[in-house]
Image 1 (tube, rainbow, N blue to C red):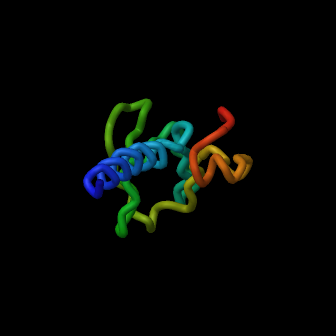
Image 2 (cartoon, rainbow, N blue to C red; image 1 turned 45 degrees about the horizontal axis):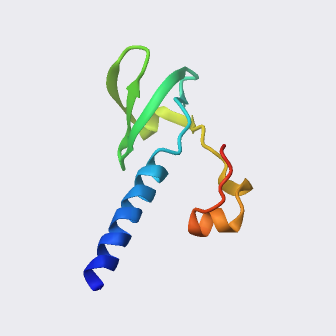
Length: 96
């Protein structure tokens, strides 16, 4: 019985983790301190020294130190519109 519950929670927890990591809708925009906008960017990691990003248009990976970044515009799905049953139990969720 215990093994069943562990497997059950691990399976559904893994699914929720994948879903949570995928909530960004699309590429983000980064504005640098110099005033330069970098559009069409996918943020791979937010590290303590800076951002690891993928430049979609150039198909390359780059590192930006925090000192060079003014702000980051991340487009995300707004889950505040979902009801409690959806948030707590993942039931009766509206398609966004």
